[in-house]
Image (cartoon, rainbow, N blue to C red; front, side):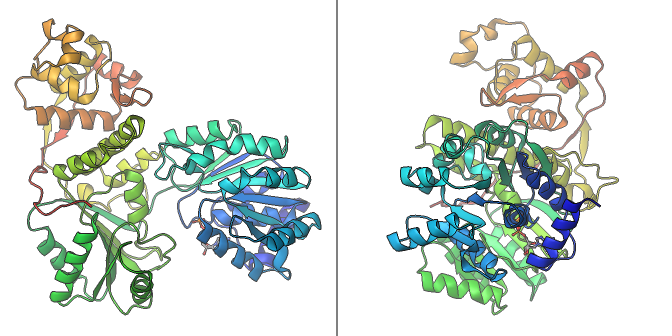
Length: 529
Ligand code: ADP
């Protein structure tokens, strides 16, 4: 064992009282201590904070921790102060401090007392702060919730964009540590580029949650009754039911109460007192179920949530993963049930229509993934992990049988010749269409784009008339999931054929396609406000 290894183990015990590192923590910490740029991708609860807290405590100088949420910063500062002899060990620098407080913070930094300085990105733009930080020893910069840097993340913050520039001004050789819990390959690429740490040592923990059971049901008019039945069957267990609208939250919690379920509503429209009361009731087990909008959940650490129900499908796989991730934190049972109707997707699309075009395109692409996920016949777990850039083998992987598609496989039909038609058409049209346009080409319908390319005059135009448009959409989604087609991200979803697709065209193999489900019925109630 080298001296450093001994150091970090005893520091873990000394400062945090833990006897073992969790997951990748040890390797991450070694890299940070060695002053490398580091990129950490770990699911929520994975133990990211320790990856910078421990090195900050044992290295020379002050570590700057950039974090987007004041509440989270305060929690962390309190926690660190709790394990130290000196309150000055951790500080927050933000606009809520008065002059005297700012002076105290700076004094503690100059005197080498402060090991962790939490800042919101907007505070870092203040010239006087930058000037000050240039003059002191900075051990490293940790950028927490680094996905905020990417428009492809679920929580884009424009202030994060400037970070690299500011860090450079504070010092040339400051190591950077980016940390996130939601990193699709696209977001990861954005983070590395934006922070200019392309050579960072990357640590990625598995996102697999083997104890969670994933299930999607078609959403019909009887969705409320279905939810009531489910909740009553799980009587006495803790659960969260997510709805998109406040109105729905109110209605559904009442319906549950009328049916004898101890349920409370939670949404941002309730006054703060009621919100705190309902949250506490849930944590203290004075109620079983919280019916909530996504305003509920951040920082809720209840280990024994037994089910998470989505009355409305979320707007991205990341959101779905985060929200379902609140189930089964203790490693016990966690049932994740979502209701899906294509109509809800269309509503979400309409919802985005007022936003800037680029944002809309991204939102649309994220929604397409949700559609693919909801309609897939592939294992839900495999799909989610694939989305996060992780390969999963259901036969050998933990939790391999823990989803509806694996337990109750959908009826499948051979679609080899239709897959060939799809790939061939993408190829013959020189990879220039998105799914919707390609389906029109297959079906023999033209539009301005198709006719501008004169594709409607080609012999293969309408080659897929023997199937419905819905069939082709569903097939394309499945071919994408199988990896024979790829959506080009730069062009927001133009279909391209990767090597695997060309291989397939050369020697087509059996391709079993799940029978289409009725996802088009929907409900009449779903006002999304
Ligand atoms: P994240 O930021 O990745 O969501 P946290 O840093 O909040 O995760 O850590 C999650 C939980 O795990 C916290 O309660 C923390 O105290 C605990 N934890 C972190 N590291 C260890 C460890 N080495 N041993 C035991 N518990 C740990």
